Image (cartoon, rainbow, N blue to C red):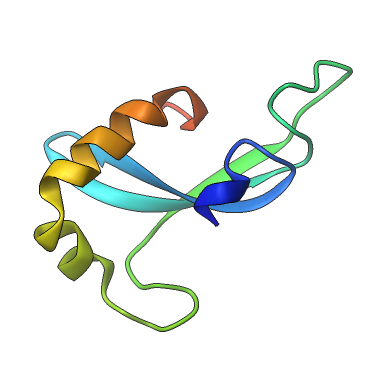
Length: 82
């Protein structure tokens, strides 16, 4: 689902909230490049892999440097709080 980031449909994206890393499931009604009309986007923090059930905090703890890089490279895709 990383490969579908920013595209219509569902994707899983790394995020940072405060000083904590997490993953969000995001759904988009159209591709991010599509500027033809209204765009509906939702995202929800997830704690477990939707396919295998692995606790995602374990993955985060084992890959902190990679998480930091992934969060930076996907920053423009994440909805901001507030």
